[in-house]
Length: 353
Ligand SMILES: Nc1ncnc2c1ncn2[C@@H]1O[C@H](COP(=O)(O)OP(=O)(O)OP(=O)(O)O)[C@@H](O)[C@H]1O
Ligand code: SF4
Ligand SMILES: [Mg+2]
Image (cartoon, rainbow, N blue to C red):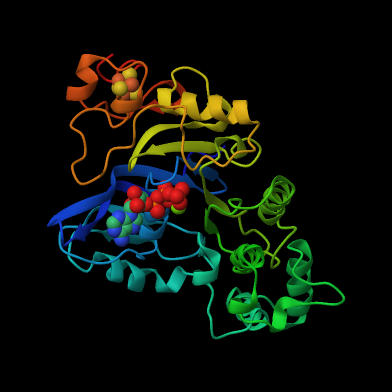
């Protein structure tokens, strides 16, 4: 796995939304630092509400602007494009980032959004959206219909009797819209693809198929032809199913309550030192054979803290079976152990252990 030339780096990133009724900021995520290397797939996993989608959207400047809502910085060093450095801080951070990223959006950097239907353009047919996306990606005119057909076929979007290319998004089922969204993400042929829950809400065989397609996209078998010498796409793969990490991702980041609690190579998942939260996610995935969607984790007593007043100590303390007195008072920092394995836990080799 490559360790140099990060395509993308986020440093101490925090974001939130101001709630007028409460007169306070709700924190989506706090102090998150991570990188994605060239030719690397990073998984972001955590249960519902942990801030995964907001983190993904923030990288594109898609969160609402407002004073005091953001801090941190982003660096984009995609192949053959000028480096982009962005410091959050002013009240128009998010729209500023959107403008700054215009030259790289699409062909260099793409997003598969969660909630497919609302993310599709309601005024254009699927065929037009797919064709426009492929053209923007630099797909030669002679390849357009072949690549479109390949994507329709891969995602079961056309048959002899029925093709969805002439339909508008309102006329698609939820599952079709979901698959169209992924096909459009691939059609961009980006160097860095952020995919938010692409396998959520579909049954197991479709899930396996979608994962296979992600692998085919990476290897260049699916989507527009990549220019010679262009690296394989890097990805941030967001999911709440930890069992999907193996076989697709190189590294995994475990997020809870807007914080990264563990970052490690995928092959080190479950190897000590690991975070008690990761441990529970792995146990539950094992118990359920990966079949159940982990929208909630009833097996863990307690609830995720509400992020108006983030706890002073460990965010997982309320649900952790290993909690000690000092966990409530002192925040465990994400600490690097051997081979880049980072864990934020006092009892698992954290800073205070
Ligand atoms: N506009 C908003 N105002 C207040 N809270 C919000 C707003 N948007 C999102 N949230 C809250 O921010 C938190 C993080 O949301 P986010 O969508 O990033 O979670 P997630 O990890 O992607 O969850 P899921 O797995 O369900 O997609 C959640 O608690 C959510 O309820
Ligand atoms: S720091 Fe304490 S409460 Fe937090 S995960 Fe570790 S043992 Fe549990
Ligand atoms: Mg989400």
